[in-house]
Length: 339
Image 1 (cartoon, one colour):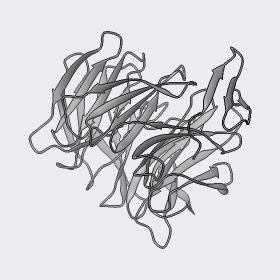
Image 2 (tube, one colour; image 1 turned 90 degrees about the vertical axis):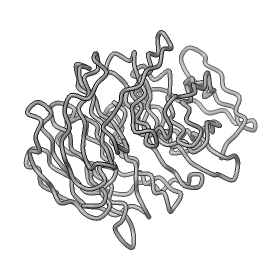
Image 3 (spheres, helix red, strand yellow; image 1 turned 180 degrees about the horizontal axis):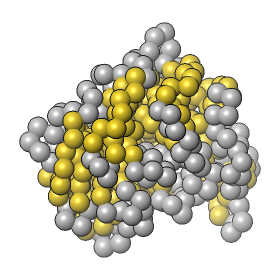
């Protein structure tokens, strides 16, 4: 993994100089089709063309990759890893065009999920064991600030549509941290007793946020202004990621232990459909137009798979193999966990 990079922003391009080599990156084309799947037990990222489901590359990462996301400008994809040989816990940065490693950034202990802001200038990483949030500058790839959270066990954070607030579920304290990024104020939202929140989604107007709860096998609806849970709904066993569909008022929630995706109507607040997908349903990401949802199947053997759901029919139209224990997934220019 590349370390100790000299990074220079010229105003038009990012120049990176590892060991005397010059590389230049620029914003990617929206026509470029890529999906990125992290495989925790293979220490790889599978790069897939979602148009024909072909494997384009298997990119080595540090040990135990956890989360994955993509730069909104199409320049980079990002992976969090735990217990690498180079350092304890890292954010790794890769070039979208070449899949080559560009940088590694030391973050907090056991980095989990990550989300870029909509300008592409900042990255936010939740660190599960250190109970911190790392704020990273892009394209400098330097930690600007490390915020200590009041809750414990932060996981699948989400950013408000206007970019002003972050919501971070805390698995071990059963609550949600709320961070006002402009004023640097923190608050917490209480969840029902026994909650073990995992990941979050948010409505397009920012009025409501949604958090999956592995402890109670529910999803909770949060009034953002009131900072309170206003409704809860039972779903499958061990619900995981929960980004809202990009164009319609539905959550498609992979449930790891039941091998199903629960489609939740967030306006009517009811389960609209239950879709069988395969063993270990975990991560989910959408194509930009929302026509397809891609769900990682972390417990399929001998290799993990990804199920493709046509969201117009709510049927699985295909599955394709990746590597061992796929967890996170992100689609270039798509709708991913964190937004």
